[in-house]
Amino acid sequence: MQFDHWFPTIIGIKNNPKHKQVETKLVKFCLDKKKKIKSGGSHWLSHETYNTSTTYNLTYEPLFLNLNKWVYDQIVKYCHHMEYEVELLCSGVWFNIYNKGDYQEYHRHAKDCISAIYILSGHKKAAKIYFRSPILETAQEPKIKINDKNAYRAHYEALPGNLLIFRSNTEHAVEKHLIADKRITLAYNFRLK
Image 1 (tube, one colour):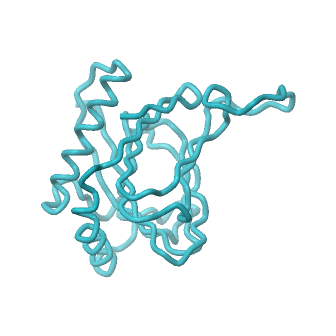
Image 2: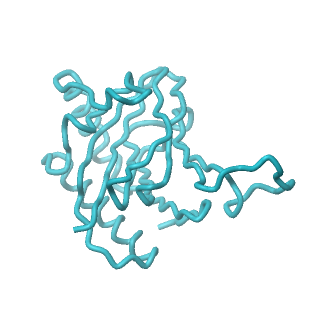
């Protein structure tokens, strides 16, 4: 697993080697469910972006069980790297569908401990995921060469099969999606047992 050290936050990145085997079935499932299930997140600024955060939980959905287990295994590896001695319980899994013009404002998952984003469908031109430093910029900034030790934000492309793992209190957002192709992600949250 690759670990990028942004701000004082560590973001774990892992590509699922079996992604191509599950992508088509899981994308079809999400698109079919969108026709039947009301969108969540009505209180968000980005309320037009479809998600099932409060309306449909994928934690025990049979079609997602193998992927969910793989994600959990990566969460355990992340915790070992961080030297966390914790037992975690998945508090929810939902999907997000981004159409052209959709976005997600900066937010955090304060009730949880570890969060993850799995890119189910997307590509290099799809909206990027941004993580924001908890350290605020000041008016007097030295001239610096931006790197992982001093950046105020970091971003990742929406590459299918990629999993991003981070502490739940890390602010993250999705920029405006500017292309016609759908961008579909899964959001995972874990709490202490």
